[in-house]
Image (cartoon, helix red, strand yellow):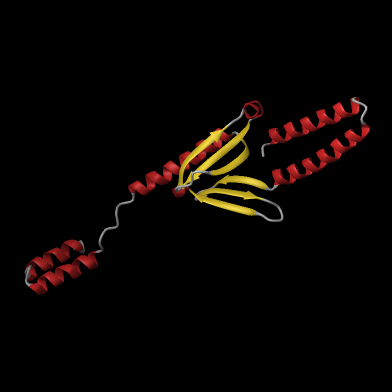
Length: 175
């Protein structure tokens, strides 16, 4: 959760408490303060113990204090990334980042993220780097030992001569 979202929640609770106290309903004010305190404690713990990290290998999502949940999403598994920002999110600077992997139609949601478009852009850049790196890796070449073995079989069958075998062997071994 973003710090601006947290501040927004605190502001709402303070406004509600002030309205209850001015309405003359002290019991409602006390109830609002107790509920607000519980909500704020929960939000603070959630805020402190939730993180999204764009690492070298993928996106790491850690949430929780006692029961910590860790989701690791490798870049090579990510298909698309979307950022959603509501009207309040535009005003307060937070939103949701949604990561789609494989045939996943629901996506993995990271809610209450500060600057979701920047996070989305960072993930997309890393995904494109991984895709480019996979494209530039040449297909696995056959080893020279395997080629020499095939040539030896061809020589034994009489398909190639000893001279052709030796010539190709030297070529494969870069001699």
